[in-house]
Length: 258
View 1: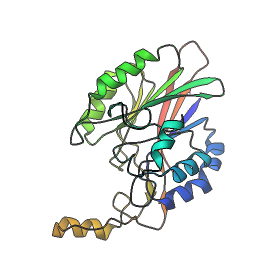
View 2: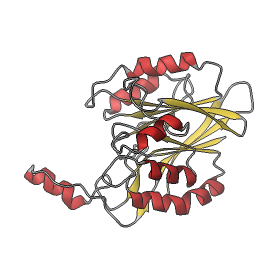
View 3: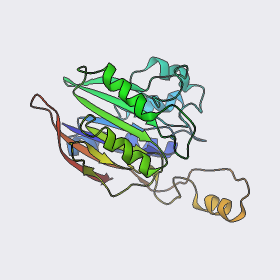
């Protein structure tokens, strides 16, 4: 079983390009399941319901979120009603949406979890405890478990990965928009990468027009962020799992750009 995990989708232009390329890429690489972070896909940041539906129609099986996921009011009802989009587990229980989902993929039950880091980010409940509770609650109800750690600090992502090594099959970070080069299989068998990177404008700073970010850093004055345009690049990893026996095992992980 091959699972494609895509980094943060940035800008409506990236969503449009996803619609042109993802299904053919899935066919080319024989991808069975796709998960992508979509919290920055809509204009002005965040994700609206219409854009979420487009991403799903274009070949993504489950959308994960992060600290910007509630920025568009139209998404809140969709978060509550759809099993194909999740938000961080460790936000308050009254927040719209769910922190995990279990989706059937040709007879294989794939559980996708989403958690937010707390280092250099909003103060939330413990991400370790939030994920632990889901694993206990859903024990025996899934074949493959995936975790999107939406966090700033690389150390926090790696600590979570080491803690859940051997209990979650695929663990990956999002949020920084910069792909790391540390894809690996951890000692107890989990596939891991610190950050998947970004699906967005290649000629940019984290998806935003470079001159705007540079101006802000030089002048320290408020600026209006605008998504960059031009060539779109998609980045992420492909997890290759053996699901033929009684136990799911990862047999490979590789970074991709397309």
